[in-house]
Amino acid sequence: MFLLSYPPAYFDVSKNQLNGTISSTVGNLEVLSHFNAGENQLTGSVPEIIYNLRRLKTLDLGDNKITGTISENLRNLQFLELFNIRMNHFNGTLPAGVVLMPDLKEITFSNNKLYGPIPPDAGDADPGNIELRLTTHGCLLCAFYDNNIETLELHGNDLSGDFDNIVQIRSLEVLSISGNFSGTLPSQLAGMKKLQYLDLNNCSLSGTIPSIFENTKDLAHFSVADNKLVGSIPSSFGKLTVLRRFFLDDNELTGTIPTELSDMLKLTIFTAENNNLIGSIPSELARLEMLDTLLLLGNNFEGSIPDEICGRGRGPIDMLQIDSTVKCGCCSMP
Image (cartoon, helix red, strand yellow):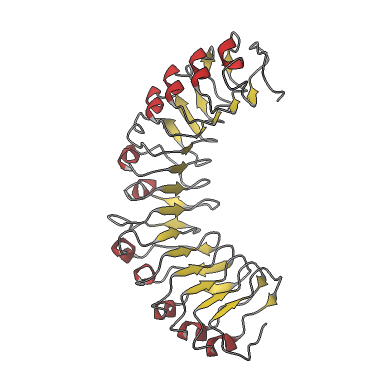
């Protein structure tokens, strides 16, 4: 517990290894605009009186051990710009009206025990205003159609529900749902043209990788690793000329590496370990001057690593791993 005897506008006790509970005396600081108690070891629930601090712009309680539900009185904080409760033990549902708070710019709920529906009014949020990072447990009932949320992070949980609903959020630039959901890659992903970061790692996905990503021109990170995907690598990935990180490892992919991937000139990491890929390694990959990690172990490749790759202009790839059945003069030890 901590007590206050003076009325500051800014109160920051973050990263101090504090324990105990938040004192209700904090609610008496009527002029308080910024309250940061993040990265401590605080327990207990948030005193209701805090929601009477009408001037509050920042309420950061992230990375503690706080319990309880998110109070509906949070909506009283009409000047709130940042609300962070990530990495705590909050439970219950997200109160209706929270994302409609007029000045709210960032709201972070990741790694709690929230469940149930996302409020239907989330779709009415002010355009371009909210960066929503929401992590919940249980069933996610999305109501995100026609909104302007840019970031959705649901990773590190065990969510179920309709994955197809999420991909209707056309405004998303970051979608990270690793470790959740199941099913196949929805064709609606083709409409998410603003995507820059897509992480579908460990989602129990099955079926093939459809040729639908050529219109996501800004995509820099793509991961479908650790799933059950089959079929070949679509050559249309070569049209993603700004892609930097490409993760296909631990699936059941077959066929060869498309030569068109050599058009991904900004690629730095390409991993396709533990699949059923065959054939030889395309010499065209030597065009990827920025590539510094190429991991291909656990496949059925043959032949040798082309001299063009080992002797490319900027030098060999920093980490190149492939099965010993393939001759390689510049490979790293696995």
